[in-house]
Image 1 (spheres, rainbow, N blue to C red):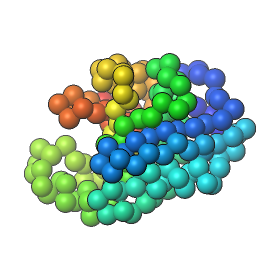
Image 2: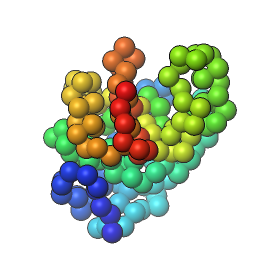
Image 3: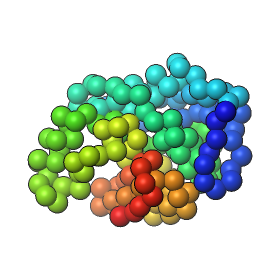
Image 4: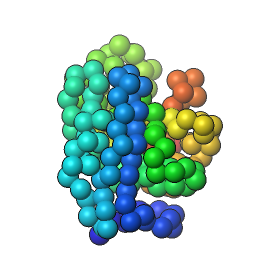
Length: 164
């Protein structure tokens, strides 16, 4: 049975997630759960759509992260086909290391990033102010929330609850 932890929000009969990768221009609109059951095809579509765009490496994304994104979209009153702009989903250890090295000590890239576990995404929701997206994510209280207004995205993950 699927559940959305945190604030009480009715779980939809179907869970759909739409994304547009800002780096590749690719879009995904995947039905990944229906009537309490995860759908392998939809999960595979999301793993591919959220892959490390630098290396092409895909990874099974955390189902709680996918549920968090659905819940976040619902909380913001957006329809199921409203696509998140995806800045970063899965990040391979090689990519994470290269980004950390390139940015130095103040890169903002964690050595043990939740991205490498398929438990994080950096997102923007077109038409929704970034500070509103951050506030909604923080109100859900379901993991980490990072606010990057200069870079135009909010980081969400299913690690411990924290914010920066």
